Image (cartoon, rainbow, N blue to C red):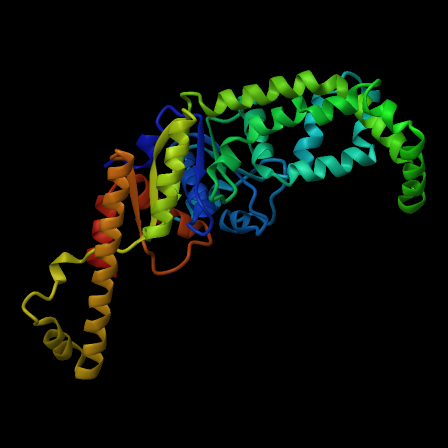
Length: 383
């Protein structure tokens, strides 16, 4: 079975997708580290505010500008760094502001929107749906052409459409009747000028301390000149998601529910005609087949080795429980591969400790990039 390196050969974008709690951020960092070690200039992008990515890469902090990871820190883990590794944490609000600056027809329109109180509220609300801003930043970096590979750690989602439909939702917002009404000088604005609404706005001005009508008018007047640019950008982002140079990797765990969610997400990728690369199954239990206690001799062998029959019994029972988990995981992953009709399933074993630093990432990469032979060695030797 192929490792991640083979799956991503010739790709410019890797999007790690899946539900929360399956190790997506760590997997994204490990993939980026592994590809950089193999000679690529890679940038990994995350929206995880918990600083786990920064900590794992040996960085004090991450923000909306890419920072290079010190190659000597990676090489200290016994990994030869042939390329470059960069990382950033997406700031959705800052990304939205950058879009305004890019699409404004002139400095006056740009400043009117960015300084407008209505925009500050709307941009915060839209930026709260981080999926589109992640896609927008991905498109920007790809267009700049500074990196060989971009690895995106996506928001956790149960409803795949929340992520896959982000560009379409922004286009619908821009093209929506509500926004068009606001931008028509003879529509909503004329009605707002009516006596009853004017009284309401006067009261609101006293409460909030600013002229709501004036701010609405200023915002929508300035924003109207940017609509075409936003629509075109959203379409281009959507095209990038479906391009041959893009690959979606679904990350999941070996339990029933994460497997079901991986199948669901894959179905949505297929329905949306988006390029599926493979599945990474984290924290698998691998069977230690040569230790199976067929003859009932394991407990006795353990008692001889440990010199304690009670302890030997507990160890033997623990091993039996582990083997049951290994059988369950194997069956679930076989079902996953069958339902997805793919051989591109990368199995990562349940490690003895959480991955939280560069040493852990280097260790994890053995399983991500070297195929299935290493996990089998782990089952036999590391446990």
